[in-house]
Length: 272
Length: 357
Image (cartoon, one colour):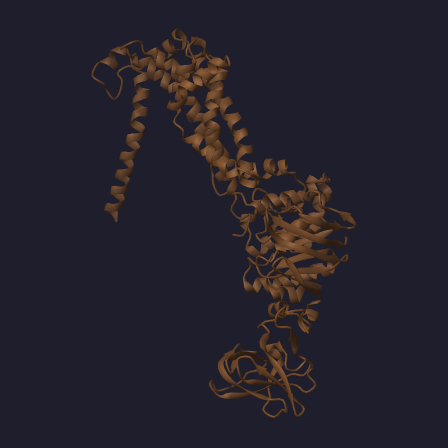
């Protein structure tokens, strides 16, 4: 018994260590002076410094890429959730011709690897005059996030009992009202989860930004970090500082959203 | 308060017809129960009245107004679902008052009406609770309370008791009946349970495979079923329906069973002799009678005492005959028993169509 507990805590401890150590290393490196970074690595710095942050934010102008990333990721998230909420609702609640085919196409679009599409998409964006712009990047990100969000939301919508919505229709709601006032509130945990997925995806996206964006003031955070590397010189201090700053919005988002992620909101509404 | 008219209503899903022209006239204040086996279209019909299903053809009228193209919210109906469909994110009072809130009523009026309904259904102490904190019976009551609060033209119930345990079901049955006697709102109630139908309805509509088999008061349907389906569906245990033909000899009426053996029918039984037909007789209308003129023998196969009654499966030739005795009863399995059919309790049906003769 006791041995079993010790072993399971040991296993959990190792797992936690594996997950947290890179984060620890990122934070600690961002606070080290260059000479300490390039010497024999130490687990605890002798002197703490904010020089790396200063250099990144003021010499490299990292605020602009962060702002660009926020614009792109927020827009992609909001637009994806709105579009996919309607798409998923229609797939779940209405019967119409080709519904099954459309559903399979959505899954197919979501499963298509982005690396297959970046050349066609960059040509397309150039032709419509949206290359080297955040709008273009947003459109391209949406092409991947909307199918994903639609697919995920379908599952959450399906778990809202149809009768609740029908009761809403009888109580005086329109179809739209039933979607907005019953299905969406009851799917809140699902919408929070989908938003986080989409936001994270758009926030971390590097490949398309690399292909589509060339000018400096349109760069997103991952792209700007990438450009910090010049040939074989890796400025580890500023790079890690950039990684810390880039992960902050995601951490805040996860922290806020975990309150919404509480499951079981629908328990007790129907039978039980 | 309103009457409800269903006029030659049909429903198809694609090319599959599920309702084949149903017409029912329900006067104001009547409690009508749609009953039938699963898949007979009764729930579909109810959902069409509610506006949750489209009407393929025909007309539904609520209070002299054709509602075919009106959305559910414009029909002034209230519905109680089988699984209650309480909003999990609202408490009991909010659940009950939601329709009024959407209709733009004042807070005071909503509170007043919710309280009045809660009084009727003993829900006062539960008004602040969430549905997840209620028992099945309480949820059922809240669902009914929500319907009452609206004071609609028509109440619709979709198998409201089937998720409750047997004891609670019996209690809610009389509660719903009492509620209807008090409110006198036109009610359409769907169930597959013939006991619910018999005990609660002013009138029963028996449905089968998308058609109405018979409409009438519960006891009329019990006494004069229009066909073998209604005869077999209403009443528990089910009516014996026996194929064979009538023969008259020396003033006695004999029924020759198709599977061999005979029954003696009470004197004065009508029916054309020599024609194949179906004889219907309910188990409770057969008595043990060793002395009567029209007694016949049947072998006891199984004896099932319930305490109050005794259900006996007997066999004549190769035909089984159920007999229900309203008493305790000793009988030896394998031995013959003298039975007699009560006069005036026979039903004769045409064998091909199953129609009453």
